[in-house]
Image 1: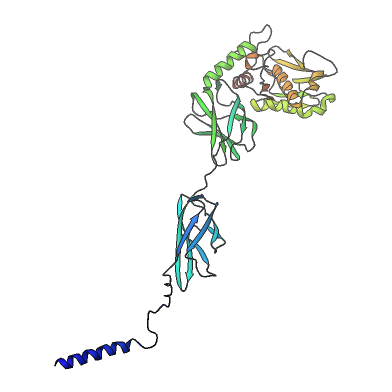
Image 2 (image 1 turned 90 degrees about the vertical axis):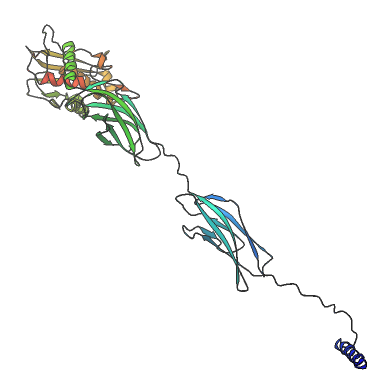
Length: 409
């Protein structure tokens, strides 16, 4: 038994030595190859983390470890809409133009790399802000007239004078709004500068403010106010007061109208080149007091007329002077003398002077300083000449010419 064990042990040793191989023997020194990478890391960097719509941001991708030669990065965004644009759409560097958004929106910009059938990604987030609209400035409006309270009423016109400056948008219309915000009248005005409008609708009765509003194309507006008393009774009382104070014939306690409401104005041949000037002066009265009808003529068979005398070859202290002759109860005739200085006036001042002198024939021989620099004119507002007839004077003329001669107000 013991001998068999020793023999078996020797056999096992020989077998082990044989298994080790022959030859030199010793340790194997061949190097182990490096492990194959399991993936790539892509880092995306942006020049800004926020950008306004329509602006560009610089985008760059870095890959670690280095990808095989010829590898390409492609770009995309999430969400896909609204779509920005990559330029170029592929490459390790690009720019992204932010899309238009209605509110602040966050997008993910994604870099994609395909290697050996596997796709690797890198992302970065960016917030797009909507473009801030520039501030919208409304138009501006200022008034030259009226600047104090006006008594107005049925059938009268209130001339409103002022100026407008354009804001951010084109001009659309001028509005007059009542104290209860109801629209009374509107006029289309598209150009800045001086304006003139005639208000005939005064809304509710009583003492109040009216809003003069300039509106632009997107309905932005600015406004100013005028104070009015819309009272027919008070307007008539003030018109009667005007007539009692000013329109009195010498030696006659009553009022004195011209003899007719259909009134020819005789223009001499030497002044016919100014025919339209005379027509405009007549139209002034026809507009403010429609029951009157004044018109220029070369001659007339009418018994009652206003005659213009050409004395423009003479110098005087006045541009023009008016005389009227009285019948028993009416003015039979009126004479307007035009002097040299009238020719030197600009067209608007020529019309103004004529309208003023016509007023002396039609209404009163005296100056009425409390209604302006001249009798019924408002000749200078700012640097522009305007001619108006205040509502009280309009009402006085209508009372005078709608009552019998020698009527007492």
